[in-house]
Amino acid sequence: MGKFCYAVEQTFALLYRFRRLAVRWERRTEIHDAPVSIACGCICWRRLKRAQP
Image (cartoon, rainbow, N blue to C red; front, top):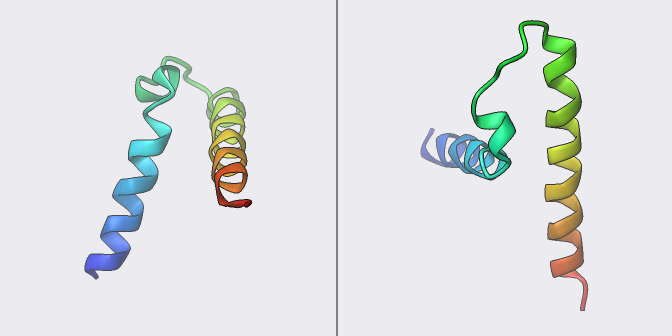
């Protein structure tokens, strides 16, 4: 259980670096899903760039 909780907490910490995602102002979820998808893509891109030699 500890490894699972750590992964979830780390994911939320990475997403909250994008300040607009920390506080959700939109009422509809589809409006909020677009910035979350973009943030996830940016996080993956940064990790892939760092992992390449």
